Structures are given as C-alpha cells and as structure tokens.
Image (cartoon, rainbow, N blue to C red; front, side, top):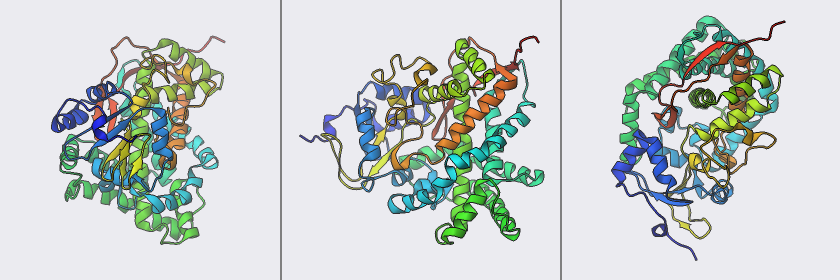
Length: 445
C-alpha cells in the first residue's frame, strides 16, 4: 500500500518558526528532526513539503533512483543561493543530460592521476603558512584553515604562482566570500527562501565581487592562450584542454568562470570548515591526538584518513542534501508528487545507532580496515550527484593534517564542545575551532 505525507510525523513548530530554527539554531533543528524517525515531513515557510529520510535503504533509493524524476539543481534554486553565486552554467545547478555531460568531461581531471599532481603543492603551501602561525596560544583554527585552503585553491585551481597576481586573486576571492559569508547575506538568503526561492535581487555588492573574480579568471585565460600554456598541472589548464577538445559550445569562457567560482567557493570554504571541525573534535580526545602523531611519524595515512572520516561523520558541514521531485516518485510505500522535495539528512544518517554504535562518540577506529559506506557516510552526497570535488577535498585534508603534524602538535583541551554555528548554508564551529598549537616533541637522539 502506498501512503501519502499525512502518514509521516512532522515537527510541532509552525513553518515560520521552523524555518527560523533551521537557519539560526541548526543543532536544535537537527535534534528536533532526529526524534521523528526514519521518515518525516518538514514544512518551512516558502518551501514545498520536504520529506526527510535517514534510513540507508531510503538514501540508496534517492541516490540510485530515476534521476530524471529527482533534480538536485532545481531543488537548490529554491533552498540555497547556489545559482546566484555560482552562475547558471555551474555543474551544481544543472540536471539530467546537461549535468551528466559536464560530469563526463570533468571527471578525469579530478581522478587519481590528477590528484597525484596536486599533492606536493598542497604540502608546500601548508608548510609555507604554518611557519607563520602563532604557537602556544589559543587561535581560531577555522581562520587559519580558510587562509590555507584558499592558497591551495589559488595554486591548484587557478595555477597562479606569480605573487602579484596571486595577491589580486586572493583579495578578490576574499571580497566575494566576505559577502556570501556575512550576516547580511544570511538574512537575504533567509528572506529569499521564505519568498519561495526568489533570488532575483540585484545585490550589487555580490555582483561586483563576482565580476572581480571573473575578470581575473578572464585575464588568466587570455594569458594562457597567448602563451599556448595549456599543459600545466592545475585545474584551469585542464579546463582549457577540455575546451580545446570539445569545442567552445561544450565549455565556454562563461562556463569556465562559473566552474572556477564553484571550485573556489565550494572547495575552499567547506574544506576549511571540515578541517576545523576535525581538529576541534580531535583536541578533545587526547588518545586520538597521540595516535595521529604516531601514525604520521610512521609515515602512515590510514589513521589520518580515519580521523577525517569520523570528523566529517560527527560534524557534517551540510545538514542534508535534497532533490526536487519533478515526476511522480515511489519510495517503498510512499508516493511523492511533483513539487515536493526529498532530503537525505546527512547529519542524521551519521547519527544512526544501528549503523554507528554510540553515534555521538568521536571514534576514528570505526573506519580502520573498512571503507565508509556509500549510503551511510554521505558528506559529499551520493549517486551521480556526489560532489565531484570530494576526492580532492579528502586528499587535501589528509595532506594538510599530515604536514602540520610533521612539525607541530595540537594540544588537548578540556573546553566544552563548540556549538554548531551557521555560515549561510553550511555548519561551522560556533567559536571558530579554538585550538593551541605547539612544536612537536621529538625523541632525543
């Protein structure tokens, strides 16, 4: 028998209060939804009914079901400012054939061979910046990571090494991120969603900041073409090769600018927040720090990767992923009609005690000797819409942690867990992930 939404539980708050809680009190919002079970309905002001799911069988159905019926891009246009900030040609806001075409073109440039070429540069940038960090005093680690991941993105995505041009790119990106991450834009986003996903504001500060980043990208494109410099090991060079191989219609300059902006915003800020959360969690568990140091000293990455996986499990920077239903979709006894949304709740899937015993405990050993499950560990989403930059982000987090711990150490703390904070659509450490760094203790010769 197929049931409708009336058969599912829903939070007791009205749609306006629930929307405010989602934006302003994300921990309380997630706790409220967790009490509702495997499936529930969330009704927030301005949005169609959103069916939340947490059971792995339902997550799998969403990720592997008929993707012509479930659109991520269309859903994001209602729920988040992705199209406004990233552009209408961004792979994130495309669906169906248009998305698959871009994905087929770009996947080789984010595969294992490409990642190997980025690793040395990631480590080099980490060493350069970590020598400027304050030691033996509290510091907001998220701020350090935002500086570092931006430098990595500038080097590996733009491929900019000339100091003056790198400075201009850095300043332009920081202006753009400052607008998107500011309280004014958060208020604007809340209002736009409450008005049914109406993002058609002129928002002159945002557009000026976007134009500055795009202008620098266009400069770099022109310089590369003039020098016939298309073989460098950076993403921009790869995009120019794609354009050359597939023609301007497949990868126009506008599309390249949109994709570069997508990689800059999505790749730099979310990775920085994940690293900040990982270290915030690790510093409250001295045995984890000890094992991390020992693992790095042995030149092994398995425990580093396990800490990354566990940190992303217990502190997901995205509370859920979603799809807009555009054709009738059956979900094991539940019929979803066009216009509804369905959302695998990433944070709640990661809290399931039947998958992760003692789910609130930070225990990296869960991921030793086993790979994270495709439908139970989903910080990057899944299926054909899994984040294309996921492997890049995982490599970056491994390299950054490994490189830091080769010379420095994180000092354990007895401070309380940091609360969940909000930076537009992402969840960040509420106090900035305050940590203290010290020189690594070395055994006497």
